[in-house]
Image 1 (tube, helix red, strand yellow):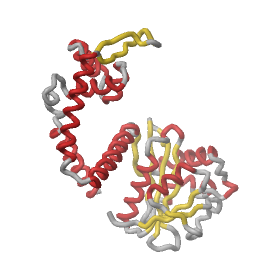
Image 2 (cartoon, one colour; image 1 turned 135 degrees about the vertical axis):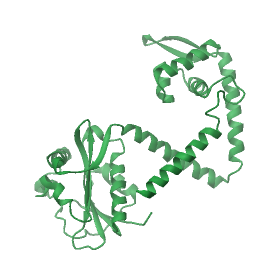
Image 3 (cartoon, one colour; image 1 turned 90 degrees about the horizontal axis):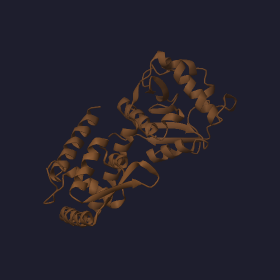
Image 4 (cartoon, one colour; image 1 turned 180 degrees about the vertical axis):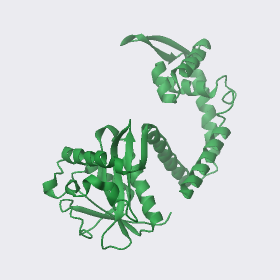
Length: 309
């Protein structure tokens, strides 16, 4: 947790530094008669005509702020509005010839700024920065998508709800009890007791007052130093938001802090999304399962060495 706080503080500091030194807090962008918001609006409208709603979404601002930016561009004869061809209640904004000339000047100015910055770096460094910023932007998007989702340690009060999630998702994918999947576990209705043992933890995802997913870590029986990532299930309404990865990372951090050397799991090819995530996290398939989990139908055993962060 301390390392996470240190990383968060450092990223915040670096983000503030970039915002300030790229001039985003200035009243105008360079020597142009545009505020940062107006400059971003000019760029987006130059790429494609925009409605106020579309522009607000792309700039991550409220519609009133987007409307003010558009009004400024129109007042300066940089943009013009016309009725939407498919919706008479909506206006579409596009650049005027004057606006296009100013956009060309803006692009030239910003290109020069970034060329001077990139001139300080090697090709490899530029590539690494591009990759890191792409990942950072993706993380920002996922965090926004997860707004309203609460991740917390499970309690006895969650037992019935998480058991129902596991049963519902298992039924959705045809993972029936008679085939040897974890939905048949006799402890399914009392998971809080199972994960109260030393070296174990279960987390649930709560959304709009309902438990809609979860995942856990527990020691793998008769395998010292190895834990198992278990019972990771999510209801359809919260899939695609990156929560599976977030819970897996949380569980793996817990495993490292607890002192485990490796993390084991068993899955099936039916769960294509889960298998792809495990591979992305660095899990490798094993030729044979470890221990005796009782999940005979999970034909893909995998293992991840846990290196200290």
